[in-house]
Image (cartoon, rainbow, N blue to C red; front, side, top):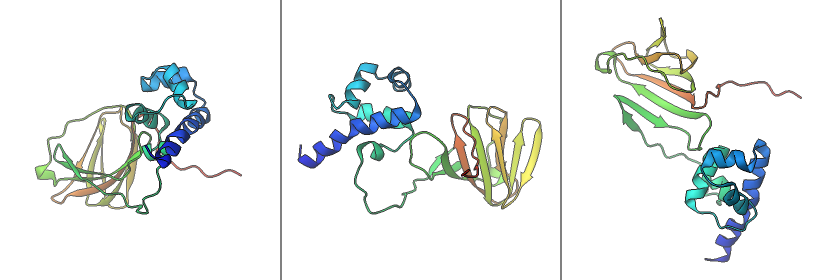
Length: 192
């Protein structure tokens, strides 16, 4: 291993320690979140144990930071996110964020109303906000039904039974922010 790689690994421990302290988490708390022992976490933070990918992945997820931030990877010079659409249950989902944990952003394309899967209300943990970019959306939230067009937005607790689909013969495109732990997608003014 070259000197540059050793320098990168040597800096991981202090970054892990700072992230944990900033969150106000104990080693025991972090052990529960990651499945790593408190002893292993302590040795990683103190630089007495060289981190492995299997250890860094759950730590990045627990701290809500990209893996690159843990190892202080040098910038690549290319800030673009390379989008890889995923087709799931008739939808096209384009992940717009690559950060582990926290609120995630997606572009979701719903097929035209006649080609969409049948309406099936779903529930799951989390909080969702969506903005209609193009087309018209039929949004069912428990016993209420809404129709939204371009420029309109909605937010809801995903534990409430819900369904989203195109409201007409054209696809509907949405920008969606989703917080798996129930984080709300809102802005608050900076107080000075």
